[in-house]
Picture (cartoon, one colour):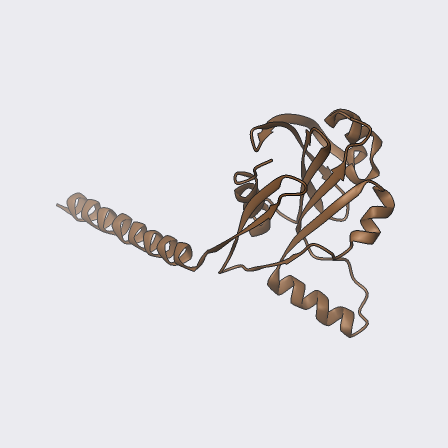
Length: 195
């Protein structure tokens, strides 16, 4: 009889936990507002979510700085969690020197030398390939072949690179932990890429 009571309590507890998780999931999904970036000049589109953890999107920030290390850079797109972006803006306003926050960056590079993905990784300082952890892995990005690798620096980085004719597409996320929302959102974004 005592065993039956514990079994019943366990079953009720499981249903309560599942109910809470379901309610949280529904609440989260209702607050997501998908945004789509689309570029016809350099064929690319992807979606990212705004809502609970909104992102500040920029296609200008740090462009000139990045262009110094990658002269063939055509576009640089950044996504930073809005709360982190606000802290950065406030610190800059107050003269506080600091590194930028973790973020997702997309680079579109002119492939005028017809480089392969591997050749670009070895040639470009933007790839940070010399800091690779482990080995590069083959994957698919927007129905195209791509290479994915992790590197380390100020932040941990995960980078996915794909060559598509005249353009090299580089998707990068900087993060502190694999549990960070920005790391998880990076893979959600990659699943929507069209090249």
